[in-house]
Length: 363
Image (cartoon, rainbow, N blue to C red; front, side, top):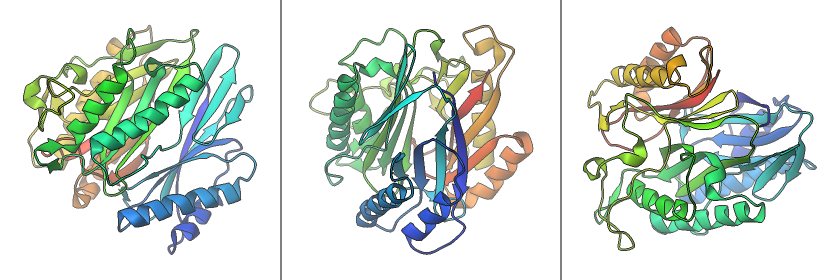
């Protein structure tokens, strides 16, 4: 696998989306930037699409010959201004092939695909139709490079109005059904990807993914003894009606985490034990339970290779209600003070959940 760096940069100016983007770009010091994920909440879907275009123009202007991939996530940041996660390549031996929607990394027998934030052709269509449109693009990218869906090790699924019901059909369930159909085209002998399914305020559905072909390092799913695997959930905890193409509501197809080399990719994790939510209305209580679950997930005893324990490298903290961020941040800073963190306002995949956390850990 390939060594990468991650940094969080917030615009130091206010103003237009281009002004804020240029402020961020001026502060990037990574030599080989693979991808920039921008976070900001525009006022409308139309503004989201315009911002997405302008961000890409700015990045191309700043990096004319080796243009990084761009994703634009419609989530409000803690400070309310444009923020970016910058992913750099820290592997001088890698060959980088940049394409319109993805980058292919190659070294010896290892090949890795990193995608941009892929949008559907029409964000006004149903969540199911949007997701199908995106998965068709992902299928083309994988096939063109000799990959299959089961080579995906990490996926981010951003869904506008994630828990909204439309005539009894829930957006998140529609997404899960589309994902299940796409994943059904392959055989998953080594578990599903680590993944996050999270709400956004604008822009319909967007998916990012990373896939790898590498036989020389561990690539293993990690289950959590405190939780039922999401892909084994019962119908009881799934919401929305059954779509015509399927006989029942399909489960979310992801693992609680995935070990790749020495890195643990931690899926979006919330206060769910077994398969049932913590219904506390206190965001800090849910945060504490979420981290209890996550600490167990990455504990020495639960990692499926010999190890001396792990440490968190990065945590992205999604908080449903903006007013809860100060208290959630206070808990996280008190208990995990040395970890790089990003706080975002986002709806969670179950209405009763107030916090979701994803991240990276190293063994």
